[in-house]
Amino acid sequence: MVKNAALSIRISPELKETLEKLALDAGASVAAFVERALEAHANMHEAGRERPAWILKDPEVTHGPLYGTRIKLAVATGMPVALLAPAAAEKLGQQLLDAAKIAAKLPKAR
Image (cartoon, rainbow, N blue to C red):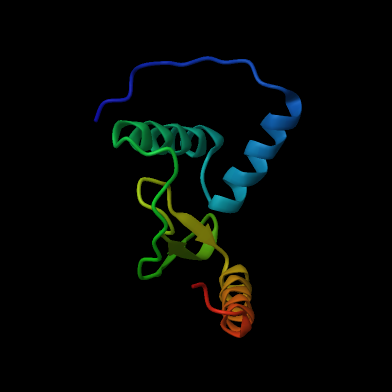
């Protein structure tokens, strides 16, 4: 797809700083990160959903010269994938396992 349409907006310095950090963590440029977020939001509305459908697809290991090794993880339909450093992916996995253990001890819903 040819990308030749421009969009210019003004945002707060705090939001810009947050977007820069998120883009860096995702291994993307700010422009690519924001484009994916806007596209995901538009796709959800086109599909008639206000929230993403949560999924957990098979993780994929990627490696590049700029950001090194990353774990590519799809967690919701219509949303951009997450790119996690291996240590962050391991931490997330442990947090999910810990939460599942706690949830298993709670009373069952009727």
